[in-house]
Amino acid sequence: MIGSASIVFALVLAAGAFAFRRGGPPEKYAAAIIVSWIAADALYHMLMGPSGFDAVDPVHVVLDGAELVAIAWLALRANRMWPLWAAAAQLICVSGHLAAFIEPGGMRRAYWAMTQLPQYIQLTALMFGALAHARRTRRLGPYRSWRLA
Image (cartoon, rainbow, N blue to C red; front, side):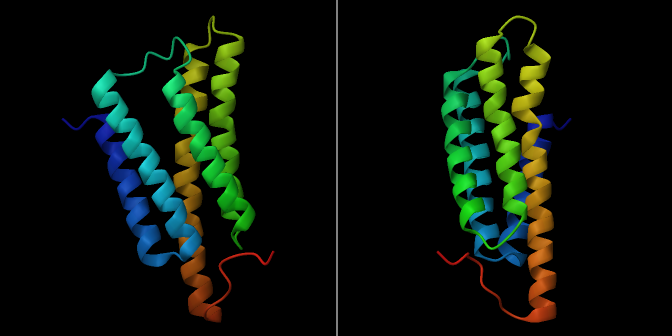
């Protein structure tokens, strides 16, 4: 039987491959950021075991904070709208760590949801972004990937 982690990793790899094949530079950067984050998280859990979501995990705070910085940078620089959705989803994730730190009692399910579900929003935004880029390129030809300073 295939575990849920294997399914998530397969979805991440499929979305990343689609973004690399059909997307422009912003989609490729986002795919690299998300796939790297998922790989680092998987490696961490292979070494340290599964999360219990009963206390704030400092390693996840660092990983999620680094992804927030990278995705927010991309959202501010890319000539696309979808990275704003990915950055907002990651902000929810980082806010989940803060909420669990401030109020640790009774937060287990909410902490899990706030730190685990945003990746699906990011993958959806990445897929729609890569698809929109491919359609726009086919319809209009090449266009600027990055905002002007």
